[in-house]
Amino acid sequence: MSEHDASARRHADDYSDRVGREFPGGSYTITPWRTWLVADTLLDDPWDETPHPVLAWMAGVAGMGMTWDDLFAWFDAGPEDGPMFGEHRTTLHLPLRRGATYDVTGRIVSAERKVGRRAGAFDVVGYELDLHLAGEHVARCYNSIVFPRRDA
Image (cartoon, rainbow, N blue to C red; front, side, top):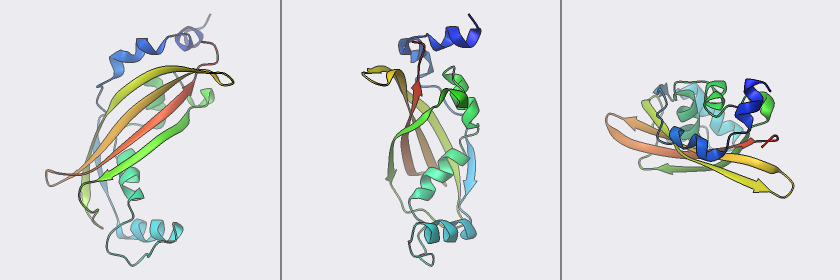
């Protein structure tokens, strides 16, 4: 049995040590050109001074300080395992600002094993990404990733 096969058999409780693990973090600037393109793509007003809220998520994942492959590896998975985007919720405490550079922090907040009748075993991992500007908490994005565990 390969190391990958063995790790695929782990129970989600084995991932409880990842809950609370912090992302390396970083920063992200909401550039005017990206603000315009995102608004245009989403059929929003590209001339609106307040960037579209989806940019909170984009800033979070771009500034979390690691790649998707790095995050998947924390849970003994890779892109070939078919991880899927689960839930998403953005909470804006303050409006986003065009041209502002946000500090990004984040952490793993949950890891749960579930079993579906058709899907079989899968792990649902929740994580949060926070945006701060000049010490103020501007936004929090909660997301989850679903990791299929075909051999569990």
